[in-house]
Image 1 (cartoon, helix red, strand yellow):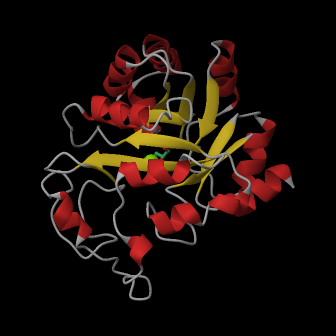
Image 2 (image 1 turned 180 degrees about the vertical axis):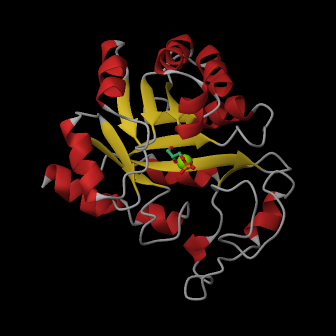
Length: 245
Ligand code: G3P
Ligand code: MG
């Protein structure tokens, strides 16, 4: 079972920071999940929210900020705000860190609420430059982004993210058809939508099922019984111990 540290080891450390990624290194887990967006001046950065303010002492959006402006920001957390590894990282910094580890990197493209032109090509170019095409999985809630990825580079594995909203709008058959059309290797459902039928139908079509975001031991035990292929968790140490002892 593949265990990913969701947004890094984010239950205990500030999400999507190099600090949290480095704290995921010795856990014996499969990988790390990050969220990627693009700044006004075209730099790929790692941050979950499209707007600033929840974690960092800034205002406005990622899309309308320059990289220099983002890099000046500090975490709101008083204890951590002056730590060097607690700035908004670039995708390049994360690739540089991951490349010499055994970890797989799940790059989630945040291209659903706010659109970033050519973000797929920009990500693929940098992944290729680092010779990490076989070390990454690219996921998105936006299936058009996944289609673009598969057209641009057939080597990189992709995953369709399915949250409660997608599941409400489209039935399982349609969702699985999208995965086929986008040539996905994985389907990444929310733990709120996955069930026995979901896993069985996905497996029947050769898709691997990796579930987000699993932060409860009870849910994890249920997912082990369902024989899912992986999970994303904010508590990778606890979940990994439960799964692998
Ligand atoms: O990639 C799984 C998960 O991260 C998707 O949701 O909102 O946490 O990025 P979110
Ligand atoms: Mg994510």
